[in-house]
Every structure is written in C-alpha cells, then in structure tokens.
Image 1 (cartoon, rainbow, N blue to C red):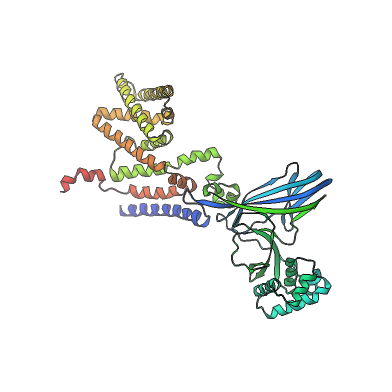
Image 2: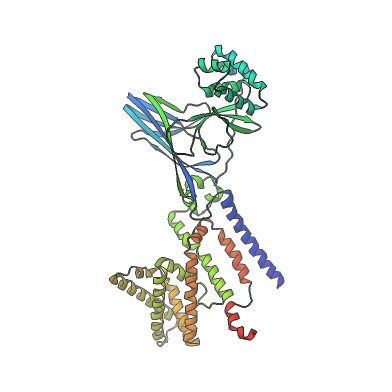
Length: 511
C-alpha cells in the first residue's frame, strides 16, 4: 500500500514538473507573456523612395535588412501602385525591386517593416567569410596623393593603441577631433570619399576584419531620417560597433541595421533625382497578438507545434475545451476536501460552461426552471411504467420542448438573455432530471435538494474559475498547465481523510 502511495506521488511530481518546465521555458526563454495584459513595443519603419520619371522604363532596387539578434520582423509591406514588385537574392542579402514600363513625373514608393524586440527566438548572427587583401592593395581606393598622409596617420595611431578595438576608437577620435592633426585635415579636405569609406579602407590596411553598416536608432519616433553609417570590427570572435562621431558603442539594442556590407542602398535606373528617407514610430500592442504572428511561430519549434498553428475555428474550440481541467479541479476539491454532494461527477462542469455563454444569473434561473419543470413531467412519466431507455428518450424530448418554449417566450417578451438557453447540454439535463427523480423516489425530496443545490453551487464556483480572464489566457497560451493540474488531481485523489462537512457533522462527537 505504501509503495503504491509513493508511486502515485512520484507520477504526479514528474507530470507536474514537465508542465512547470515547459511553462518556465515559454515565459523565460521564449518570452511569452504570462499575464494577459502584458504589452510589447512594436517599431514601425517606413522607407520612402522618391524620384522623377523621364518617360522611360524604370527599375528601382533597394537593399532589404537582414535578420539580427534582438529584433524580429513581424510584418512587411510594399506600397507601389501600378508597379511590379519582387524580391531578389544577392551576395549581400535580399533586395526589393520595383519596375514599370513608362514613368513620367514625380513618383513615390513605400516599403514598411514592423519590428519587435524579440525574445521568442534567439538566433546568433550568421558569420560570413571575409575576404583578405594584401596591405599594399588596401589603400588603392584612396587617392594616390593622400596615401602617404593615411599611412603616417595609421603609423601614429598604432603607437597609441593596443588592440583592434582601441585602434579603431583612436582613429575615429582623430577624425572627429575639433582640432585634428595635419594628416586628418589633408584627408578630410582633399578626399572625395565619405568618412565611413576612409576609415574602412585605413582599418583594412592595418589588417583588421571590418565591415560597414548603415541603420537607424528606433528608440524614438522620427521622420525624414537618413541611414546612419557605422563601422563594425571583429576581435576575438566578437563584433564591436563604432559610431563615426562618438566612437565605441557599448549598448545598441535599439539600433536596427538596414544594410551590412558594401552594396548600395538604393539603385534607380530610368529616372532622376532619386532619394530615400526613413520614418520611425513605435506603439504598444498586447503581447498575446504577437505570439500568434506567423513570422514568430515559424522560427520556434515549440510555437510551431502549438495551438496557434491551428485554424481559427479550431483554436476557439480549444479555448473552451482547455477550461474543463480547471472545472474538474474545482469539482475534485469541493467533493474530496469539502464533501459537497452533486448529482453526477462532471455535470457541474458542463453547466458552468453553459453559464459562460448565458451569463450567470440568467443561467441559474433557466437551469432551475428546466430541472423543476422536467421533474414534474418525469413524475408523470413514471406512472406510465416505461422502460428506462424509453423514459430517458422521453425526458430528452421534454427538455428540448421546454427549451424551445422558453426561447420563443423570451423572444416575444424581449428577454435576450433567455434566448441563449440553447447552450445548455440537453442530454446532461435529461440525465440530471432522471437521476433526481429516482433519488426523490428512493431518498426523498431533501436529498434531491441537497444534491441539486450542491451541483448548482459547484457549477457556480467552476463558472467563476473558468470565466476568469487570467485562467483563459493561461490555458490557451500554456496548455502544458494541464499537466500540472493532472499532477495535483492525482495527489488530491490519494486523500482519504475527513471532509470539511464531516468535521462539522461530527463536531459534537469530538467534543
């Protein structure tokens, strides 16, 4: 007996642990919202492309952002009336392409992304192979007359630095100094390339693994922005980001990289005066909407094998079905520990689910009326000496007739709440009437009122639990909580002590 006891406890503990572990993993690792009112910040980035058509075929190509750690694209949309739109893959990533046969006058194209700070999926940034070039070739992109000044500056910075990161930070500081050195003045004054390209080539000449990136700070809402050029340097298998004005960036969680590498951001052929600007805004949305997003679900194995992948109609069915275990927990607790007697084991759960559709007060009134009228008619049927199957079938037909009559009467009286009576389980009501009628004959009216009132009380308690917003959110988003409930019910099922009602009943004896 003792071995069975410990076996049941062990089984319950293992089942509950599995459920709790999955719950912990979804909340802490995947970042799913535990509370129904949690919100997430969604960032919206809009790229606006403008140009003037010259009555020629136009082709527009724009670099698209790549995946990056900490930010997840949840939607993207291209607004291009009259233009054909496609995506193409290049060596550096995807590009958005618009095309039209003839274009005249000013034109505007839009490309919009929605991002969220992503905890549901944690991916490491894919490493790319970086080509190496010999030092004597690295400064060929800098004018010949400036290469001597660039080499002298590199030699000077080398003495004032200790590693690739400090070398890069010192070079940026020299180029951003209010009173720069003579070499920097010459490079800035006579060179026709950007500061980003100048620093990039000089760092490559020093032998550093470096890449150019362009992006936006998305922590605040702005309009008509241009991409900010930055530099990334690899040292000890870690990429460090540098601002061309401020130097080393310690925290850049709100910087969204739009382009990484040397590919152009925008190419327009067949038009003139092309320009691209960006706008950023942010808003708060409920977290529960994000976890149903297809882009998020497909990147997580657990979410991809969840209720969110089902059709909406099936999801709605499971929203109600998964509430049943909580109703069962209420029934087990009130029967095992409190000792409330009910008519049937799970009839209160089904009645509670009907209450969720009809509202509590209207549901209680209709339940009492249906059962009361059904008992009267069932008493008359008992005088006909029918067989059990025929008698139950007759009671079912009587229940349907009562529900139909109440629906029609409530419609005529304008009582909309009573029209929801169709949500009551007809077969369960018929069996309840039959059981109460037999109980009346065998035990008397008192026992009928005790079990009927107990059933109604348990149904009301289950209704309050099952209609709770947090419980509904928990069961659908974390269905593994059912395993925890199963473990608890197994432990409760091992209880064989006194119930609360028995303690009250035998109080005088204990005294």
